[in-house]
Length: 209
Ligand SMILES: C[S@@+](CC[C@H](N)C(=O)[O-])C[C@H]1O[C@@H](n2cnc3c(N)ncnc32)[C@H](O)[C@@H]1O
Image (cartoon, rainbow, N blue to C red; front, side, top):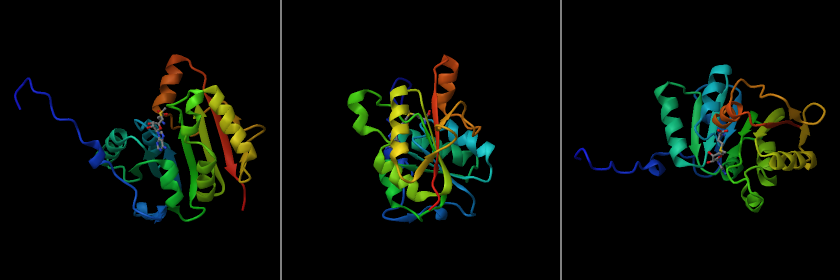
C-alpha cells in the first residue's frame, strides 16, 4: 500500500463475536459463577466498562446489533483483560429467546434504546412485548429491568408496557427514577448530561414466581 491509497474497509461482520446456535446456557459464558447482568444495545460500550468497575463480581453480557461496536467493545474488553465482559453481536430480541435457564439473570440494562425514535419507527423498537417476555423469563425473582431514554414519548410507552405486563412491578411509587443508581453511565447518557438533555429512567422488578 502506498502513502495515498485508502486502507481496505474493516470486516467487522466476520470478526464480531456471535451467540451460540440454538438454545444455550448463559452461565457457561464465564469460567466462574457470579450475578449475571445484561446490557442490551450497548453501542460504544461505556456502560459495560463502568459497570465492570462498579460491580466487579458481576458477569456482564452485552448484546449489540451493530458489528462494528460489538467487535470494538469485545476487543477492548479482551485487551484490558476484563473476562467478566462477554459480547454477542446480534438482535437481542432474538438471542434472548434462546438463552437460558429460566431465572438466571439478576439485572437487565437498556440504555437509550431509541435510534429510530419517530412514530413511524415504533414497530422497530427493541423494548416491546416479546422482549419483555424474554426478559421476564430470564430474570430471577425481584430481578431488575432498568430502562433509560431521552425520548419522552418512548419512556411513556415503555412504562405503559410494564404496567400491563403480568410479570413486572414498577419500583417505588411509579417506576420513575431521578438518577441512574448503578454507577454505570452509557455514552449517550454522558452526552445527554453534557448537553443538559432531560433523561427519563424506569426501574421495574420481576414479580416473585
Ligand atoms: C441510541 S443507541 C444507545 C447506545 C448505548 N446504549 C448508549 O446509551 O450510549 C441504541 C443502540 O442499540 C443498538 N440496537 C438497536 N436495536 C438492537 C437490537 N435489536 N439488539 C441489540 N442492539 C440493538 C443500536 O445498534 C445502538 O447501538
